[in-house]
Image 1 (cartoon, helix red, strand yellow):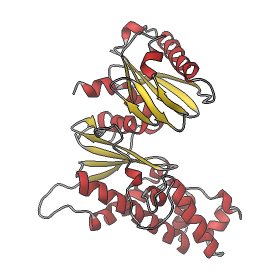
Image 2: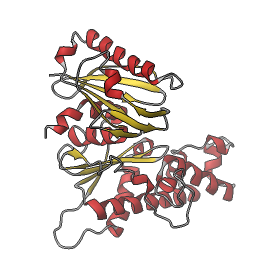
Image 3: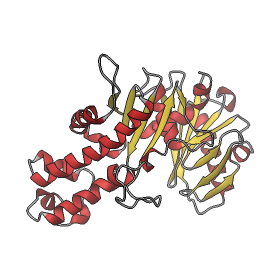
Length: 320
């Protein structure tokens, strides 16, 4: 048995073929070119799938379905992408359009949920039934896996964990609210925090690491300064970890998942981030007393392929 997963992004369409061991054996991509009519974009998706199947020596009859992960809100039952700002899609009949080229069942899911499913089935949370993935990138994304299945809520919109408030009246968030977790724990937020701190401390190593241009600061800069023993770098990292811990503690208090899986660019810091993060979460989350099992915080394993893998395994998860 082989599976096909599509990660439909605002810049590129990525397609992968998975084998019976749920490993990617072949993948390819093509530009999304979002200014085109949706029918052209979906046709390109289908043609890329057919090309890769041919390269792998497979045919449409060798796969049971096609899974699509996309940003936005989906009507899963009818295969309609109801809204995606990144793609400029509104009520797009994804299943119907795909089936004009490939006559297979089509599963549609939010891309963050697909990534969480990948980690839950074959990644860092494959050994547990309940997990939450937190992606630290431009925003704070995530997906919730309960009982081995994606938790979507009654309207398909569950999992917007970045838009829980951690600071009343705090930083303005892109969603319009103030003080969202995303505004404090995303890579974008960390960059902003690092720049502010550097402006306040002209002697900080951050200036040298940024080559005298604060516009060069990235999500790694504060950690690099911290590793040099720079006081401002240490302060920024400690503050960032505290913000990250507040949101994770909220997730634990609500869901008590067996694992929290961290992905995205900031997670590449590995134990430099995770070890102090676990310590702060241990202080503030509600774990109860005695020998009550505690949520483990781990780093994601499926990397940039998470969206493809999760999309490819959508049908498998529904059979659980």
